Length: 170
Image (cartoon, one colour):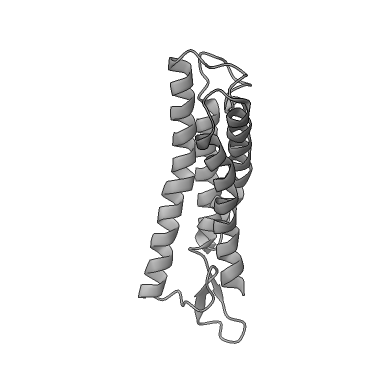
C-alpha cells in the first residue's frame, strides 16, 4: 500500500496538472480562458514543487526493518532492499528523471517563459504567468526561477542527507 500511495502522490498531481495545461494550449492566445488556465497551472506547480522534491529525494532513503536491524529497505518501496540491485537502480533512475523534469524543468520553464514575455514586451500583470514575476523588479523578473532552483536544491539535499549520521549537524 505504501508503494501505491508514494507513486500516487507523485503521479496524481501530474494528471491533475494536465487539465489546466491542455486547457491552456487548446484555447486561443490572449483569451481569458488561456490566462486563467496558465495562472492556475503556475500556481499549482509552485505549490507542488517543494513537497514533490522532498518526496523524490526520499526515494533514495533507506530504513531498517523493525525485526532485522541489519537489513535496510527503500522508503519508496519497502519490498526493495537497499543493497545494490536492479530494482534499486530502477528507483534511482526514476528519481533522477523526476528531478530533471520537475526539479530543474519547472525553474527552467519559468525562466524561459518570463524571458520570452519580457523580450516580447508583454511582461505585464495581465499575463497568465504573472504570479511568477509580479512582485519583482521588471528589469530582473527571473528571481522566482532562481528561488525555485535554490529551494529545490536545499530541500533535495537536506532530505537526501537526513538519514546519513555524518550530516546530522545540518
